[in-house]
Image 1 (cartoon, each protein chain N blue to C red):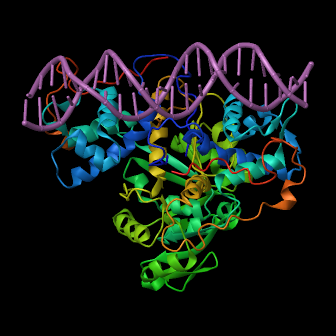
Image 2: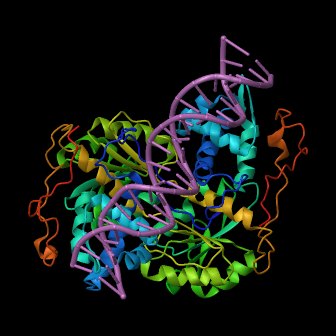
Image 3: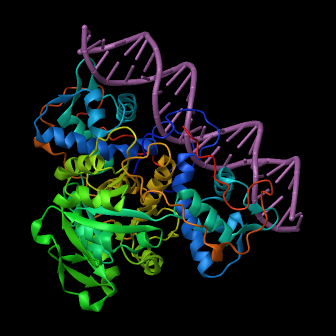
Length: 264
Length: 264
DNA sequence: GGGTGTGAACTAGTTCACAGCT
DNA sequence: AGCTGTGAACTAGTTCACACCC
């Protein structure tokens, strides 16, 4: 998951959309866009909620923070809502974006269609490898890191995407920030430190997988799906690793100490 | 952002780690692994929290759900904590994973180092394009979708990654589930519907960018950074789109109705 | 009838602050 | 003295349930 920072740091102001709601607006927008393409004129909260994968009470509450855009007894006007949510998210304007680090992931991002269709325009691709410079990726010539500051100021870019290896990320981040970037989407597996006023959101591919593994682990033993072969060989604890652990929790077994698997 | 589903649907059970805590464990693990590589023997909650980008009270509370693994007056033993968190996340076992959809993103995922180092093994790459079949990506030959069921059952795979276009995702999902997969990481921009007992987490690249745009939008006007040229041309509302909007909120202006930009 | 909008009740998550161990 | 572990206080987010309007 990604995390925002720095927003109304605990003030109890009235007008200001909850962060959780903001995070769902793109979801609603996607569902609404699909309906719009099928020329559906109106939706009920129930239908739209199903399409967006949330429950309807939450959806109605979310929309209530934006204003009263529905019609009682009828539902929501699809086109109107698309426009209102787009405006709220700031997608009625054009956002130039730079992607730094054109490896596999950077290239995938450059090719990703979901950006352009939502007002994000890839203004430049930047990489430190001189042999990449000039090579086109997704129809855009890659530029060298030396140009970073120029590119950003000349194009008025305020959003940067970091897809470099972890080791380079903080340095790239510092340069982006110094050049005037105020929002960063970070794919590198590092915690970036940024000055006040700069937003960072992170996407870590392996974190999501680890969360799945956590839940997957507790399923073992409950519903042995198909052949449970291969699904659960608890590997012996890495003996080399556990060398110096302090003698804690003396009342528990020496190794197992399985944390209450909650047997249904 | 990604969302889990289906976990202890509101029961007030005592032992069971909060979802928010689970989502942070991989973060702690990453920070701890870095310390471990530098042979740091112990950390305080303060230091580790800084490295993971959270505050120390939260970290201590999180760890308290796992057990009492620290030493008062001293801190936490790095190696021991690495082991405990790994075990809790289920990373002491090996998780075979299949990736379906070997486009740019699928290829990037196949090449991503962060999986292998955490117990995830890419067991197979699967794509519907017959011309890809046999081609190696990240050292693994791509296999055709026809083989999907066989691959999964023969390798005892329980985690699947979907990186197909949106249109194909639900169909792929259904086949994965039918074949015995119980955890899915979905990169396709669609809401997947799955039966009870199957976990889905989603990563939508454009959602994160939209959330950044939302916050970026409210910065405009406060701190006009550098030349604010290009950063804020509010585009005229798409007139064609707004045709049939019901006459709502009669007391507000016809078009603007800017939602309280909160001028500091 | 049907479906929105929203206070009120509840649940989850965070932060505080300090007792208690080393 | 220093730092963990954790109740208690607080804040954010979700769900309920129903008044209200079309």
